[in-house]
Length: 183
Picture 1 (tube, helix red, strand yellow):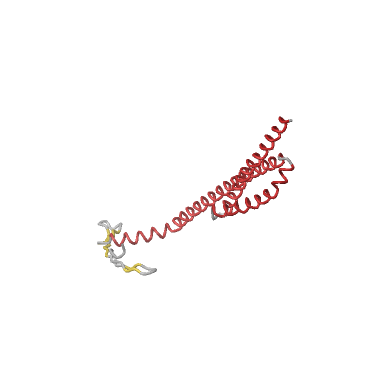
Picture 2 (picture 1 turned 90 degrees about the horizontal axis):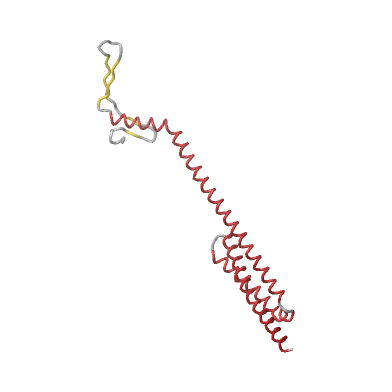
């Protein structure tokens, strides 16, 4: 705009010529001034003055917008953290229930069967922990998501093991029933 108006500009100045006429009115009570071919130059100077006067208002508006964006980001992060916390709590409850069911299934087995399965059970626990640790690490780069995946894996594998142990219990029960019938 300054180039089109033939205004010399620098880092901290604008310089240009204005042609004008000044003359008194016919009655001499007022003075009349008129610029000649100065519309482009006056528009440039008007923009500069307006920008200077509005600078603090514009800066305040930009600062408010940035604060709103930062607040929205913080609010979103808080919501995500709440969701992750709830997911972690839910996964922990699922794992706790699965472990309780596993313990009940283990305790319901006859002592001889538990003795036979003890070494296998210990190996299974180590495999479960290692497998679920790997599954958690592969699930995400986020530490809390990894922990949730690991806990859910443990719940899933504990439920599967509970079903296996219940199968042993059913075999014991059906064997005991068959023996009772043979007496």
